[in-house]
Amino acid sequence: MILAIDGPAGAGKSTVAKLVAKELGLTFLDTGAMYRGVTLEVLRLELDPADAEACARVAASLKLEFDAQGKLHLDGRPGEPAIRSSSVTRAVSQVSAHAAVRAIVVAQQQRIAATSRGVVAEGRDTTTVVFPRAEHKFFLTASSHERARRRALELGTPQALEHIRAEIEERDRKDSTRAVSPLVKAADAHEIITDGMSAEDVARALLAIVAGKRA
Ligand code: DC
Image 1 (cartoon, rainbow, N blue to C red):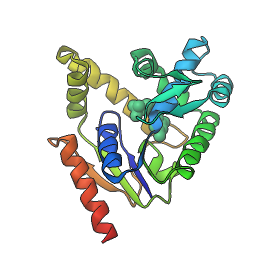
Image 2: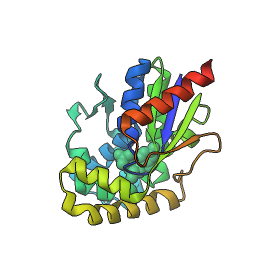
Image 3: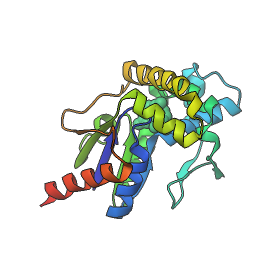
């Protein structure tokens, strides 16, 4: 079974996807982590994130693997926490906008799903491009204020709320307006607006829809 969840940065997709995957006994697939992994390596090699060919070469040569906890490893080295650094967060929209990078990373995501019992995938194009035939599709969103508030809380920097909000809105704009696989809500996805809901509330709502569809 494939359950795909898309939505903008900070909508809580990954926390919810992890909870749902655990409940259903499926593999959690964090597709954004893979673009972050490629970006980390591009920066480590001091390549230009705007250079599509260089980024694609990195994507093709880098071994991206998830461990049993769903954490990414790059050529056998742990990707966390470096893939979440602000330098990676700033460059990842540029690296992930290259069609050649996406072709390589999407093929790997499809291979992971094909070799597991089922996945709960989350990202920007999992409902539209990676798994267009997923049994269950969701679009999670929240106001940029709410998403910034959660991120600031996570980072322990409530004073940086406005700065975080500006960064989130800029990433939304880049991810939604790029030419290749922009973030859009699939016509057949259930939209859940998560303002005022906890991750557990959202996971329960998703699971109820999944159970209802199966019944
Ligand atoms: O979900 P995240 O913030 O870790 O994702 C990081 C970036 O990767 C995001 O800004 C856009 C890109 N991304 C993508 O283009 N397609 C996906 N399926 C997932 C993430």
